Length: 104
Image (tube, rainbow, N blue to C red):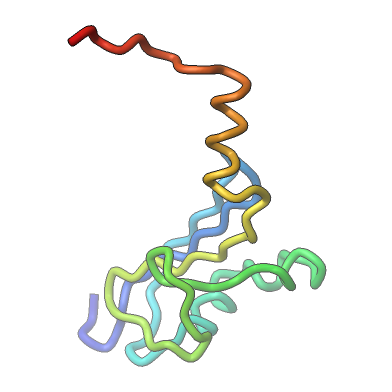
C-alpha cells in the first residue's frame, strides 16, 4: 500500500446476523463520508433506511468530515430497538437464572 493511501473497512449490520463488510483503499485525507460513498452502501440503501443510521469509527459516533486513519473501521449503526438493561430484565423474567450458583 502506498503512503498516500489508507486501508479502511465499512461495515453495516442490516439485521441481526446479516452484516455487510466492504474493504476499501482510500486516499490519505479521506473522510468518513468519502468512505461511505466509495463503499456503495449509500447508493444501495433507500432514504428511509439511511435516515436513522449514524456513522461511527469503532463504535463511537463521529462527524461525517472526520478524517480516516489506516485500519479504521467505519460503522453504520442502527438505533437500539430495546434498551440493553431492559433486554436483560426481560430475558431474566423469561428464562430465570441459567446456571446454578456454587454453594459457599
